[in-house]
Amino acid sequence: MSKRDELIAKYADDLKTKCKMTPDMAFLTKVTIGCGPAIYNADSATVAGSDASELETVKNNFLIKKLGLADSPKLMEAINAVIDTYGRAERQKYRAVIYYMLAKHFGKESVYK
Image 1 (cartoon, rainbow, N blue to C red):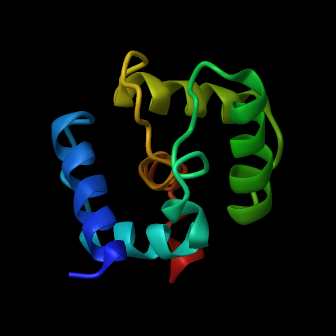
Image 2 (image 1 turned 180 degrees about the vertical axis):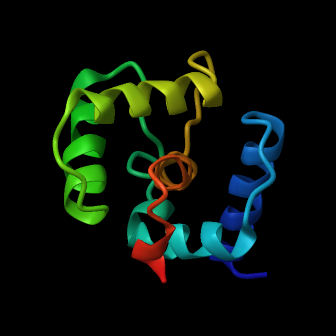
């Protein structure tokens, strides 16, 4: 199994156990590949849910630039809802898992087709 496949399996496990979701493995794979080399770096592979500037970065770089959403308060509400689903107390919030849930939340799976 490649390193990326191991990470995808880890992300799928987080979605099942921590987020109580059944992951769409094909879509999770696409989101993970879309994260690029960030998934291999310990710092960039995770999102600090309590760091306002990091959440702003997720909003600007992922929701607005990648998914093409218009800036509105709904974006930060969705990010906070995803962080709550993942678990605020959870130390390791993987970027790919958060991006997966946000793309699903906004119905933007087509961005990865």
